[in-house]
Length: 327
Image 1 (spheres, rainbow, N blue to C red):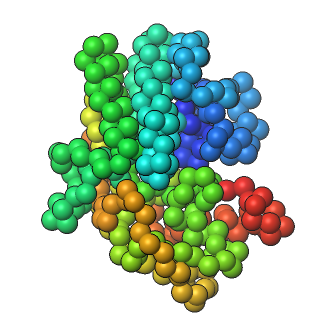
Image 2 (cartoon, rainbow, N blue to C red):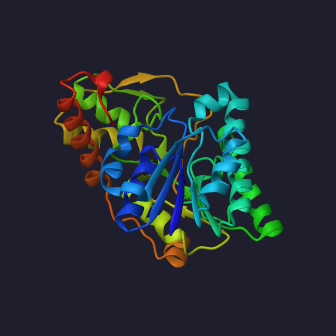
Image 3 (cartoon, rainbow, N blue to C red):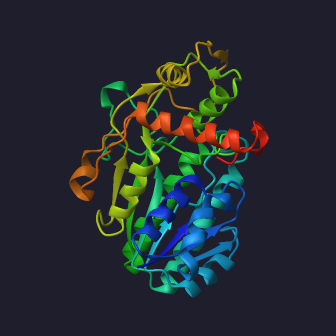
């Protein structure tokens, strides 16, 4: 298979690239390297040879259409996005330019290339909006009511996928991702709470919890998510599937779990809640099990321990300088 991974130098994208190459596929990576890092592709570039190409490109530019058409991918895994809710609140036009216009460029390129399928990284954390507790874990049939510019832009791209399938016969599989965490997640750029906690706990710096810490999320490990992407390249045609654990975990519980694993008894600091964030979220993964044959296999303790170990190893390699930690 000729695969393209937009956002392929990010922590999810690069992990997907490793999996695709390991299964013998040819892979084209597109990334503007604003949050992605070439160091995430070090292993892939060392072993893949001509089976891997990497193009530094901003999907907001129309050159994306020509590049996709030239690479002629059979399947596009579209992960490139502006993913920070706070950035979307402060700069909604930027958010829309990347997530809506950029996605349109990818779709137009796919149409020109004769691509058979797009596997899209949708946002399960924002797609359904502020869901009543009685509806958790939320099912795909729940109304789509995003409450942040980020959520709106991701839903808009999803709507375009539906339109392109109807108009041009371009198949898609959309994965509504819960809160993905794992090694390579950047605590400085992507604002993943697990990565932030891991860096601060490992370096002995204080951890800050925003709000009362009782807000919940559905944390799903990156290797499990990558497995879902692989399965969605041939299954779950023209549908949205939630990719999560179905379990709510509060920020306080997450911190307690990670602090215990790190051997820390330090209490977290408190700060005001941040605008645009939901109080509770968890995704029902039953459709993914039925349609993709997928279910999560990595528990929170196991997954967060792997992140702590990765961050610790990176700190040691960097000589203890947090500013140089390659996560």
